[in-house]
Length: 424
Image 1 (cartoon, rainbow, N blue to C red):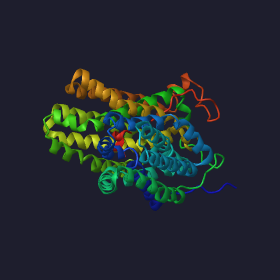
Image 2: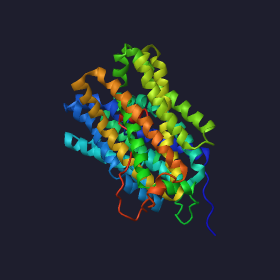
Image 3: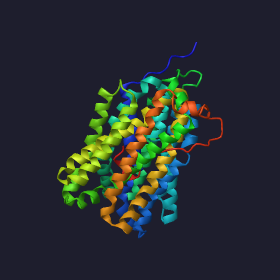
Image 4: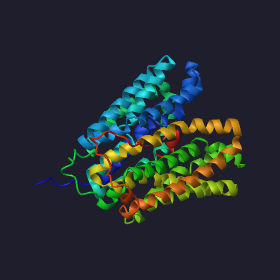
């Protein structure tokens, strides 16, 4: 007789949301606060200091498939606890760094920790543990963590002003060990073995998503994450280009958090009976509409920000719920690991690409370029739709199934920057 599957609870989901606020605050969002103090106190190049975050994001994408396999085999609890500990070690190295290479090494270690304790591994752990019940749990987690920027930027700034950036690094390291790890230990269920796992949410969908289908989903997630990254990093510049004053642009940026939280709440209320694909499509539409409004009607920049925030909020949920609906519980952690690498690598290079576009083509070239990419993003979202059809299009052409975690990986992986700052 197999043990009964665990069931999610609001208190545990809220606790997991708190872990993400604290972990994102000590990694992705941290650089926005400490970059200037670090550069000022060390005389290191600010470009290199800020580049440490890109190194962390790039490093976090490389082991993503391996992390997914670990979660599938051993459950999420030990993996996320280990990731939190590694992130804390990286923060300690950064705090004690008196040369730039050691500082960069610290952020590389932070990136390795991020690979095993932020949204993607957490989604994998929750999806594998709860199966069909995971969608509501993921919504509750992201609703709580949606206030990460709102809470962490002021808190980080207070720490830097009070005890310096090195002390702030050590403080977040202590929080990771003393707060986050106990919360993971309590809120994450013990490992549900594959033999205990429920039947996939929809077997025909799991059969339909062959390697070609996985490529489509990866491409869609990657382009969407790059758009959100570019907009987040260059948001103030985009608004100023459209005639918005700096103070007004900063105020408009504050709308992102509430917009994404409201969108997640509405998705949780009205979308729970619909396939996650429709939220995926709505996210792509919102991103395109937001950029169109900014380009064509800058006097309605507030509406553009609301659309962007709503799309961003839904995208965070969809990257956890759509693979679960397509692949089911058995393969979910492995697939999430594969889907995590490419978007993360894309996010790591996006600020550099955006900077090169601005340098060589001017500030005015960025918005039209983003509009074109947003249109491609929408087309890629349409390309995912056939995966819902039980393989009538894809499976018929490619009878092979998704490789098991024991086979060699040939598929590319998957998926912020401080840009995903807005994403948390």
